[in-house]
Amino acid sequence: MKRNYQREMEEEIARLDGRRPSLLLHSCCGPCSSAVLERLTAHFAVTVFYYNPNIEPEEEYQHRLSEQKRLLALLPGEVGLLPCEYGHEAFSAFASRMADAPEGGERCLSCFALRLNETARTAREGGFEYFTTTLSVSPHKNAENVNRIGQAAGEKYGVKYLMADFKKKNGYLRSLQLSKEYGLYRQDYCGCLYSKPEKN
Image (cartoon, rainbow, N blue to C red; front, side, top):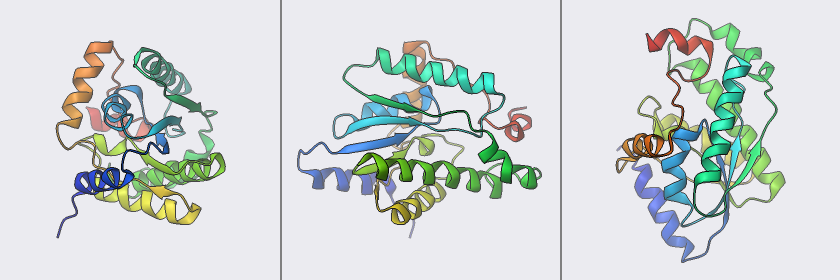
């Protein structure tokens, strides 16, 4: 039976009983984080973790990071930000061997694992109680894969992974609306150069 990750998230939030624990949110970009932050900040003290060494070229990485910062400055409430050095070599170390893999395949799963393991490690070091990712808000990302990898990273580093499928309940549509409202730059490819041909 297919798991309902949206319901699992709602059940976990209900168990908080009004408590607002710390959560490290891996964000792939400002537009995707917009609707996710709207959903999470009522229940968690959120810090955004911008770790995306898959993005090419570096100018694109910096552009997306600047949009992430701009969004956080525009949003109500306090949301922290932990940006990272570009660090593209961490992605290219394995991705070049998977150049012919289809979008959503082995290369993408390895990329998710790279980013979510680093998020979990950073969450442990920073004393965060939870971590999760914006990746599931995209209709192009398989929530089952994202959550399986996130849960494994949480078990490895001893931090609770918040199961989620942020595209549910019109999450993706809401991200489009907020992007328009805030005038955010919406990129037309995932981030890595291997994904660029797919957009065409």
